[in-house]
Amino acid sequence: MADIEYDLSELMKGSDEAVKAVMKGLEKGVYMGAERVKIKAVELCPTSNVEGSPGGALKDSIEMHFKNTDDVFEGVVGTTQFYAPYVEYGTGQRGVESNPVYEGETPVQHSADWRGMEAQPFLRPAFYNNQKKVSDLIGKYVMEELSKVNYNR
Image 1 (spheres, helix red, strand yellow):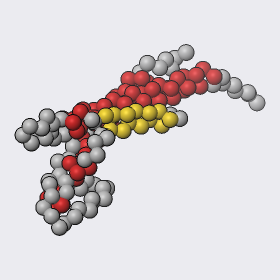
Image 2 (image 1 turned 45 degrees about the vertical axis):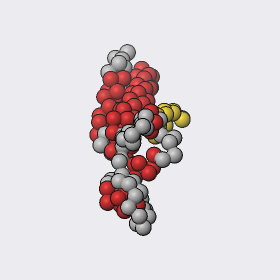
Image 3 (image 1 turned 180 degrees about the vertical axis):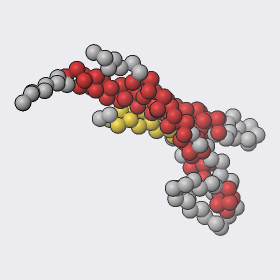
Image 4 (image 1 turned 30 degrees about the vertical axis):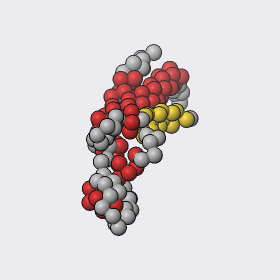
């Protein structure tokens, strides 16, 4: 009977490097994807057209926060302006008529006893209309990092 031995340590080193490369690519991809959503939200955000109003406070308040918790990468885009939901979803009857509902989203309830204002969505379209691009960015950065791994040790 013949004994066959194979040392997997070198292969495992390459595997460890590949995992690290994937994680680095994921981190960069999620960060850049969230940054893209933020840029698009700023582009789509309406500004006040009220005479004498400087406008732009909502647009200026849009931020992206990124965190890595135990290799779970999260990019959050939003605003702290209290009136942002009214702009995003609209109010009253006009809000009902003008607010798009994206796939998988629960419709917002509007008070139908007054005309209100039309929805002027900026955060949701920035997210939903860029999902493919964000996915592509993540893939791009993962592949970029994997291409740096030396598998031939």
